[in-house]
Length: 176
Image (cartoon, rainbow, N blue to C red):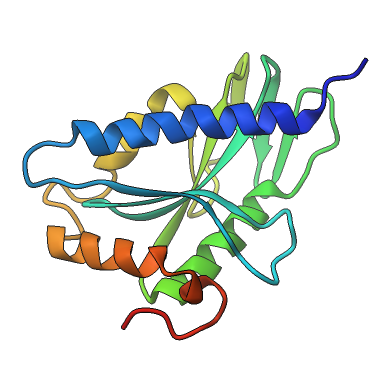
């Protein structure tokens, strides 16, 4: 029997989600990192999705997980190839998801691809505007940006509250 690929995707999302939740718990006094999981993007192609939204001092990050299942990952912007499978325009989908989130939240949202369990990660020229990290490097996401932080604690809480409002993602008015 062939293994259902959705199980691998779900396992990868859980691994990254647990690590991101750990960032919130391990943040220093006065520093908050907030995380939302499985952010809905109504009307979007199913390939355009946000697995995790991180809101912290470094800004807002739209995170997409890629389960590698011990295979080699090759990235040649905008295409991503897992093992010997056909390349898919994953970075394009990720950029679109970040743009949608940016419009919904009225703030800059940076796209991040987290590769889970790759035997090897080969990235050609660095992709424009997309950060690519391994699942073991998730903790570094809290430190992206200026050392002093892009967002202050009140901004983080405000954006997090807005992101939690489902109306924001469905085109409704949401929290103002």
